[in-house]
Every structure is written in C-alpha cells, then in structure tokens.
Length: 360
Ligand code: SAH
Image 1: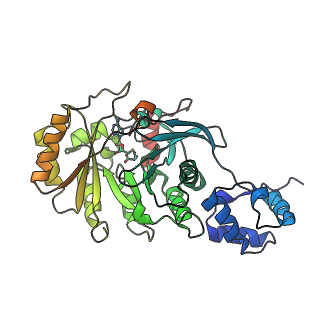
Image 2: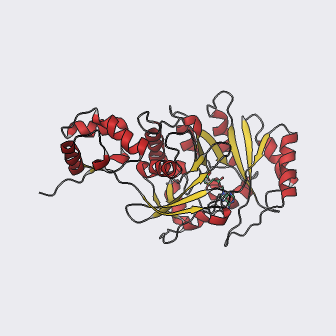
Image 3: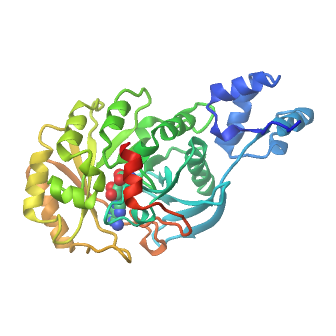
C-alpha cells in the first residue's frame, strides 16, 4: 500500500488542524499547542516541541509535516530595509520585504509567483504569472520575516504589496489572513493589514462581505480610462468608474479611508491636469492618496519625476482637501522597492494568455 502523504500543517487554520488531529487519533487540544510552536515561535521541527511527549512527537512526525519556505538570501539595504528571497517546495522563488519604522514595522509580502496584471511600470508584471501562492506560503512569509527581525512577539503591519495581485488569488489570500489572525498564532489584527489591488470589481464586492477585513488600497495610477488601460491592462475589463463605484459601496470603517496609490511617471500622468482630475474622481469617497514616484528599473520605459513635480502634484490634491502622502522609496539598492521584485527563472505565459485566464 502506498502511504498517504503527510498533512502539511502550515496550510491549515486551527479548526482544520484540530479536525485533522482528531481524524488520526490524536487529541484535539494538541492543535493549539502545535499552532503556538509553528506560528508564534516559528518552530517547525517536531523534535523541538518540548511540551509534547517523545512518543507523541514521533507519531506526529509520521502523519504531519511543517513545510516552510527556505530563506536563500537575506539582503540588507543601507536604509534598514531587508529583503528575504524564499525558495518554495517546488524550487520557485519569491521575495518578501521588511521595512522598518514607517511609522510601524512593516512586512511586505507576495501573493503570487510573478503576476498576470502586466502593469507597464512594474518589473514583476514583466514576469507574467508563474503560479498562485498557497495560503501557507503567504502566511509563512510573515512568520519568517518576524523571526528574522525578532518581531514574533511585537506588533507589526502587513502590506500585501509584494509580488502578485492578491484579489487574483482571492481564496488563498483570505485564508492566509485567517491563519495570521489566529489567536494561538501571530494574532495579527486586520486593522494592521493592507491589501493592495489593481481593482478586480467582483472580488472587491466579495471582499466587502468578509468578516476579517483588511484595509484597502487601490492602485489607481491614472485618471482617464485610456491612460489607465495603457498602464494597468485589467482596466479594460474593470474601468475607473466601476472601480470607484465599488469603492463607494465598500464598507469603510469609522475614521478609516481607502488608500489610492498613484505611481508618478514624468510627463505621463504627473501634470497639474492629472492632479485636478484625480481630485474630482475621488470626490465623495473616503479617500487618501499615496503618491509613489516611480522606482525606475531596466526595461521600464518611464522616468521618475523631479521632487518639484511630485510636490506640485501633492499640493494640488492638498488644496482640494485630500489627504496625501508621498511614499518614500525604500531598499532600492537591494531591488526591494515597489515594482522591483522579480526572480529569475519563471516560465511565464504571454500577457495575453494571462489576461484571458483572468477574465474567463
Ligand atoms: N498587485 C497589487 C500589489 C502590487 S505592488 C497592486 O497592483 O496594487 C504595490 C504598489 O507598487 C502598486 O501600487 C504598484 O502599482 C506599485 N508599483 C509597481 N511598480 C512600481 C514602480 N516601478 N515604482 C513604484 N511603484 C510601483
């Protein structure tokens, strides 16, 4: 008889783990103990779980496994940013970034290997989609970053702004948030999590129904459909008006706002006209704008505007009573900044194939 494969604990929510334990003749309450070891202390080797008896650890080992991505590189930027390169079980690689004091400690995690969205200014977009990450792979990035930075017991923020489009990998992303939220694990509050998306409207409406709801950031980047479709191709299917309507329907918490990210590209979308149009578009939405001066990269056909142009854009928004911030570029010397995450060796499908997959 072929032995049945071991159950990978990192893919399970606590209730699922308890069920799996019971089904294999273990005590249900072991689930909480194991969850604490794995998620709260980043101990993934049964032999180190000292509150389980020797005999139990051996029996566990036969039935369960704690699969964890391998840290193959840990690069440090001069500004304190750190980038982990993680190798997954199938040898694919992803990147996860630690950004200190912004104002809190922030972990930037990936939701896919590559990305299907093909935004014209983003290096990850050039890779195409290789595959979705599993819930366990998404959650593991947080655990590994927290362990690497000694923050397992400290509060931190999470931004889903690494490689990939979280709403294109909806179920796994939401399951990862539930794993991270678990009290016995890292117990991350959804208030500390921000999900950034190009704006896939049906998925936004689904997100609006979730009990565990992260903060929302929309990658807007343009103020006319013509321009946005050129920069963010999914706009063809989900145009500006539809995304903004979905935002108006979105249940924004008290004293909270939706963030609109806007990459500034010199002479493309950074004119005074663009800024005024942006202010008009956001009218009636509880919004704040986060301006991201382009992080240039080889193969990206756009320029980063001067600080003066960035300031002018910001001022026009501020004059119209829109809260605006300018994202500081972090970790550019180790290619950890927005839009610079890419790992070699992906066999990508063409952008057209990707979009067909997304839309169908
Ligand atoms: N797929 C999600 C998360 C992506 S990354 C999304 O699109 O929102 C987070 C932010 O970095 C997005 O707003 C993205 O548009 C932006 N970004 C991508 N490439 C960039 C670059 N080269 N310079 C600055 N920001 C970039």
